[in-house]
Image (cartoon, rainbow, N blue to C red):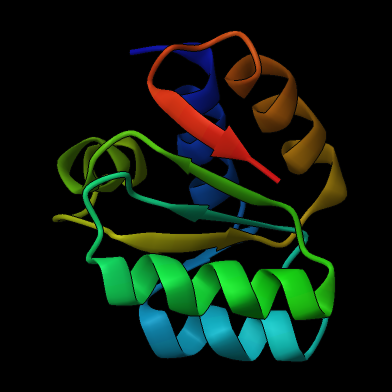
Length: 107
């Protein structure tokens, strides 16, 4: 497993990560979300919804991996969208993600 995904796992165990559509949207609106990660195999609607929401709330968005990879990094079943709520983890994940081919897009 690559480093960005192990940081996702660490953030999960530290309680600094939330997942699921509604919970992530709430975290974005309340400024709790410091970065949103959407699986590359999410539906076009989901991608658009989170791309727009992140843009209007100025939250960094990372699109990459697939739902199974994100889920297993968290030790859960498939996950399509997650929000990292800790700036330290965001820095570590973003730094790793910039060098990876599985990540399509960071905004």
